Amino acid sequence: MDWAKVMPHAVSVMQLPPEAFYSRGLRLVYERARELYLAGKPVDALTVAAALGDAAAGEVGGLMGLTDLVEKVPSSAHAEYYLDIVRSKWLLRRQIKFCREVEGACFEEGTTGDKALELARSKFLGEVGEVVHEEGMSDLIDGLMSEWDAAARKREAGEEGLAGLPTPWRRLNQLIGGLQPGLTIIAGRPSQGKTTMEDNIFVNLAAQGIPVGRVTLDMSAKRLVARSMARKAGVSLPKLKAGYETASNRGSLEDARTVLESYPMYINDRDRDVHAICSWARGMRIKHGLQALSVDYVQQVQVSAPGVRMYGENQEITYVSRMFKGLANELKIPIVLLSQLNRDSDKGERIPRLADLRGSGSLEQDASVVILLYHDKDELDQEGGAKRPQWVDVAKNQDGETGEIPFWFRANYFRFDETDGFEI
Image (cartoon, rainbow, N blue to C red; front, side):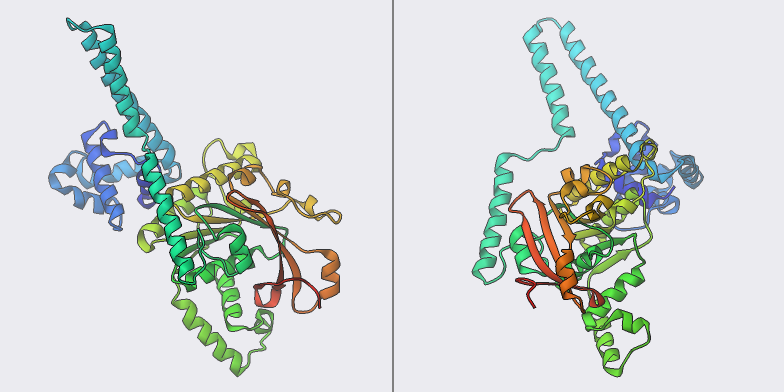
């Protein structure tokens, strides 16, 4: 079992306390493993045994007992389900204890029905208070006022007063208020520039010292970085691949390399399972202070959870969408999911719409913002050349207006530029 994949579920998803484990030995193992994980240290049988000490380790059979415990777990991919079993049993034991206390009080002389009812109410309301963490209205309003005050101070200082993290484009920032905690979907048919738009946004954030994580399933990290370098250097990537590198190009590429290497940008092209991706993001949050995450693209994310894959792509994407929405709320960061559109969106001359999101209506429902990319075929035929007209359609925006923004898409340089129109 891979402890590094198990612990993020225990700490971040379930918030499972050590006392949830019935066995004192397992309780100590879990407690020490969680402490190691939160401290950013390796978590395995050896490190946990060392953290337990001789006396405590003896309660689970020492290193051999810990190793046996690890080997008994079929797969770390199902950690969330195993932890949910532990949590459920713990809650049942607590409720049995409360019921017995109330039952005992009912047999005591002088106990009235109202008194017994009040005791039961206080016991179970207390249980709900411990299991369900809630914020009072004053806390919520204080948080909102702080956010609005910060936005006002930015505007007074001449900065953009955005509620979220900035994109590189003024009009898009004004429309959506920047990338805010929650899900943002960027969708389009192949070759419409989804990955380029994500690359422009996330490299721009990293350039401002904002730690970002990028999960690329559609291409390797090497290809993704090649695009970033070509754009940063102002060099055509197809020409570089064909061997047309000049001395000036070389200098520009070296400068781009120096800049990109300094960015707090972390790219993952290994993990494909949704649970592994979420675990990686939690680790990046703890280790590097991750403030934004992107996934390219959602239809390629795999699901190993039992009982999900058998129901087909729609059910898988629903599961993935809910997982990432929960992760965004948990970490309080924006998560940008790239998505394909259905083939039907290519038919005729119609503009893509939300219903064209491929695979599941849950993407539309779970997202706070949905951006659709498309080009007008007539405008495309007129322009040609090194740039092409592209529309960026904010089709859903929970906290503001929707609308379309014209862009130039410079494919060879992997860059989007806002424009006022497409007149030559």
